[in-house]
Image (cartoon, rainbow, N blue to C red; front, side, top):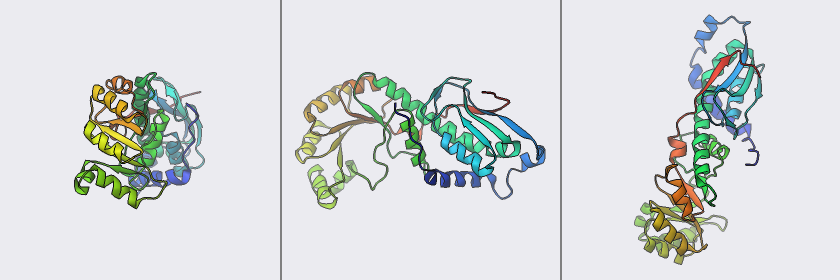
Length: 286
């Protein structure tokens, strides 16, 4: 996978600031201030407790920098790196009070985002030699969408539309309220600019025929079994991008990918990914 470029700090920093403000409250880290000497020095790092794929290092760096710019951080495992239990991800040196104050916010972000990257990487691996790409959806944690979608990319996946304003996705309720697939597509085409793509969700081959007859860019094949997916891909014949969706697990990915679909989307990789176990250890060397 090509090296993953970081997000602009301008985007990440407000998210980090809000997380730190939530944790520091009205008086800051009163435990560390009371227990740890002002001149105490920390040398150690964030270490993987289990195997996985890393994401969230940029957020952790910003956390530490905001708490104390004199803290020195060396990235040993950039986003997208596969690590084994015991591997050091970030080596950290600096005032101990600052490091301990930043610890939980940095770990919360890295554990969650690395969990997203890890399950994404597992689904990508399950695709095997098939052409399908794994994508996330808008089913993200409020206010963390930017970071979660970046974590999906760290795991080798790609992003669906980022929000409601960058692509048309006509779903079942849109179809019901518009009076059918054809009028829904026709209305969409009449109201968007030439750069905006249209995708339509279908769950039957009849609906697929209707959508294709109107000329669309992509079709979301919802909750279809592998046999129906194969028939749908054959029907599409390259006229639109094919996307399979609907509670797809790692065990199901090989059969879904073998149907020939272009995209496999999974909302759970962002909203329900288990955190990757990481910890801050004192005395870690590199």
